[in-house]
Image (cartoon, rainbow, N blue to C red; front, side, top):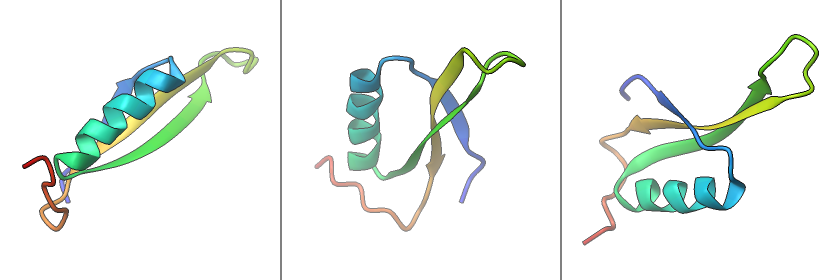
Length: 60
């Protein structure tokens, strides 16, 4: 498996749409969040994406 790339996408609906497209094209996708500041009042939401040769490309 290749190194993962993080895509910051703040809107949940957009994250789910992008994740669906990536999964259909054979990528491994997971969601994550982390505190943007030390106080933790603001969160960053992201998708962690990596290529995986064992995943099926179902876009065809």
